[in-house]
Length: 168
View: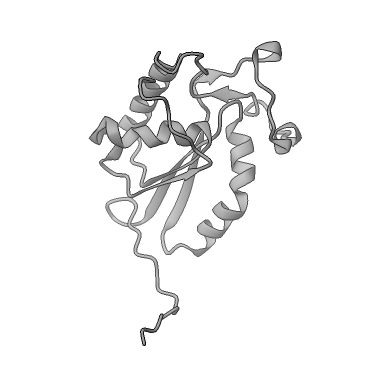
């Protein structure tokens, strides 16, 4: 009979070349903000910061596009969104805009990918934690080559969904 050894083992993550830190990029959902995503991930980030054998830093970035407001926006079903009091980073941002035709490119996605290319040129992220629309964008990064993946060790997608095949 096989047995399972549940003995805790030390983590073997190595972030920077000297192994002293682990930098994680955090991509919020569409029409949300980095402040909201940071609040939602707080239990996880607090745990990882206190339990990892290396320094862990979370880089919560704001999507490059302003979300549409008023009658142009979709209803936000997230009850935590309205309770976010952090300003000015609580301004709703988006990674791309919805498109009525799945055969056409998503408006704004090219600008987001250019923005992410510039971000990855100056940062060496060991991983990405992403939510909803941010997860959908993160899911295509490995397909775009080593400029995004050369340092990545993991990707975490929370409530993501696939982008239409012709979205890029």
